[in-house]
Length: 273
Image: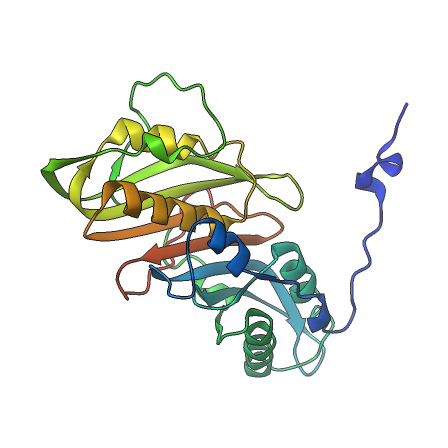
């Protein structure tokens, strides 16, 4: 009989006891974007909003401190940061003695270096962890549509349809988005809000399209960019934003936002986050 010690579950993982920026693993965005027909001139603005729930370090006298880190990586950065490497990097501060302001400055510097662009970091202390309260994305949910679905990958943009004779200015939400991590194969679960103005998007087709990511392996950021560019190409809205709120794995949740506009998104935690 096998035991946990015989499996991957029983293998020790080396954890740095001093800050380890070398643990950060940048992944260039360009190759995946090229497969979507995206060149240097991006068809969107946006940001990847990360929440790190397991950040801890020691104050200058050695007493442990904790905070939730909000990390904003601009979509224009040449690199995204692989999430397991970010977890390892953040965990390497657990015995480091420094003031909160010094920690924040160090995170900004080292994460910006890895991303290749300025990264914003905000630390929330325990007094503010319940602000704002969790809530579902605002909009009309398409989850309850009565459909028969039998395709779960690869994504099928041909499901996306819009009626040029009908106009809409609305936000459609779906809590059924799921894809797989291309590194570990683990499932990634998300709610997504799609706000647009233009020809009315067929809701049944949109739901089938989102479900077709269910067995698709890609990073959160690339999935959202695929959704954005394929809706833009096939439905031709005048205004569009796609905001996915992924559930956390390893103490991190990643929430990519892509939009035709410049406005920055809120960081409203969904109930299952």
